[in-house]
Image (cartoon, rainbow, N blue to C red):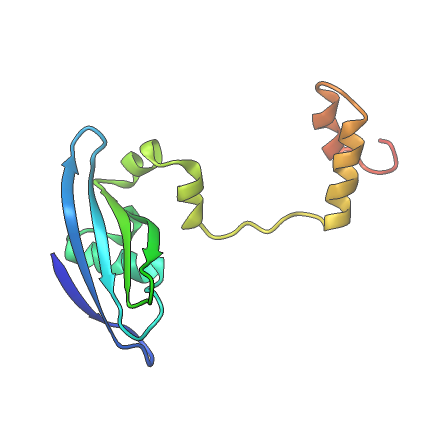
Length: 142
């Protein structure tokens, strides 16, 4: 399957080709190697790639999982892997958590850096279930 895409802004054409396409019924997904030809410009973002692959394979972008992209020496061409799941439940069941987290919005860390370090050092001084209690306790002692 080949798709030429016109990206937004001053970016030129990019061509997406898929090869080694396999339908994996056991894991409820389609898996393929993705080649992107993007002469004279940077890589397509994974979000853009998700959208393009979703339209190519007539599905929604939330079930497409692109990963492992490497740009060939000299640029202009990238190769990676993509998985297209039948539904979101199948994806959540089989995909590793770190890959699912890549496409989730980032969570803000609560508290400051100094607070986290102090909590870590206080936890070193206690053992067992007391470690979990430490995080919820206030500095006053109660």
